[in-house]
Length: 95
Image (cartoon, rainbow, N blue to C red):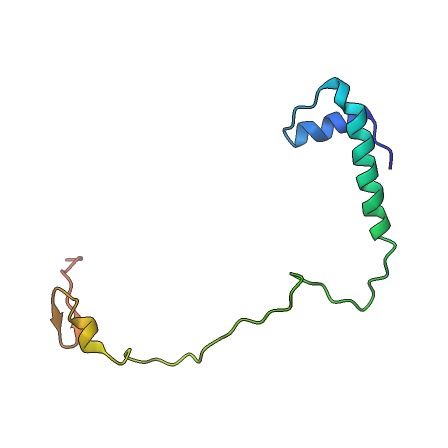
């Protein structure tokens, strides 16, 4: 796909990139080659190929979602400035 100087100038403006006037033609050639390469990817038959989110198939390790008391509530409450009835005691915020 051939690009002209005006198109390259417009792309540079959209990308907020300053390109000197003498660099427009070489950039047009380079961008044209990149677009031609991308077009060749359209020739690849991808029927039956599942979309990927990454190149490595990974599955997150999960633990069972079980509610516990942490198995040592006394040690946790020992760090509290004040504990009442097995809970953290905090100052009243809303009156």
